[in-house]
Amino acid sequence: MSRWKLYVALVLVVLSGVVVLQNTATVETRFLFATIAMPRAALLAVTWLVGVASGILLMLAFKGKAAPKQS
Image 1 (cartoon, rainbow, N blue to C red):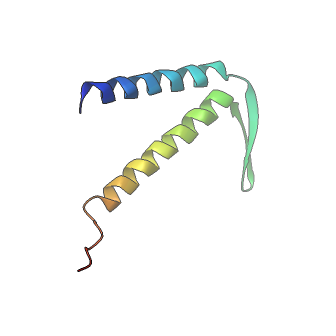
Image 2: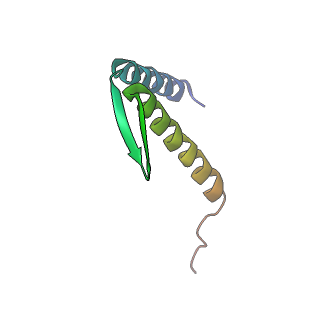
Image 3: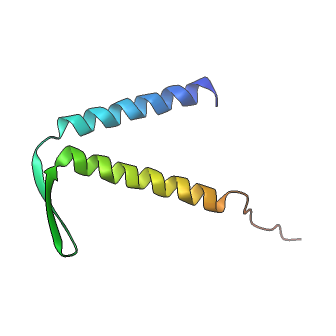
């Protein structure tokens, strides 16, 4: 990985951390039949982690599956 990609990734991680840490108010989250009270920072962190995990799994699932070339 080139250095600029590493720097961009580091900046994005730091900015994500700042956003999460600035949102500490408690919110109620309803999911199906459950209601959970948690800090907004925890909700943002969980949502971010689910998104990253989904992206990685999709990348691994479609890696190497190039569309066949038409003649």
